[in-house]
Image (cartoon, rainbow, N blue to C red; front, side, top):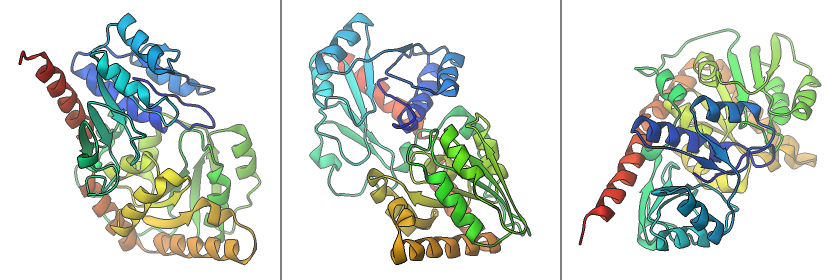
Length: 351
């Protein structure tokens, strides 16, 4: 698997590759991760705990092919917005099966298989199966989820629960690369609703900003570092506020009532679909929430009203949870590995 993670890149690529790696390992495959993991001790520990080697690079098409030959790889999973798009085609030409994990845009990669796990990705449009040279695995039925998430999935939809002081969890990826936590912490405080708020702070500078936010009456704010106990925190929360990235599918699988923020451009299409279909509430885009002047104040006030409505209505939260839980069943990674193994076996059959 070829992916990178770091304070500015985020950890979404690595987390979904880790989920896929767990499934490959469970099927008896050997897995190696190639790439850079910067300043994320917990992430490297996750790889080490599973016995997955972490090796540097490669980056160029030639380097990818050389690495595949040196390590006798049957399959290479590519999950990056930065790698040379020619790498997939070069690997394919060298006889290495390729799975390109994409988010709408294939970047011109010529792969055997493509995976777009975003909700609604199976619908016709740019990047649809008809436009790709390989098979497209599309939609939330292929969502890649780690063992810790799958094992925490409740057997039935969580019921509506009335609480006077809801437990709220806010997190924005493993590193909060765009600094969303302080912004949304202030918006949550602005609701005026009592709450016990836990905020995952991915970097020291983010923690310092969150510490500067003064809670209102009946509100507490508890910053905590990234943790492997995140699925438990999600299932214990009455409301989760998060970025509309790969964690969206974890929230859905766990049946968490959620409010999402679109923090980067490549989340916009998926964010719009998820909110439109009622899998989560929408709080808008981060640049709108951080804007100055009248427009910024209006965006923050609208987000605060949405959050207040969720905090004060267990029925609204339960409706979101039910739709989310029924959309992602936790079996996506098994379907992806089935497709990879099918492709490998088909290529091995003469004629």
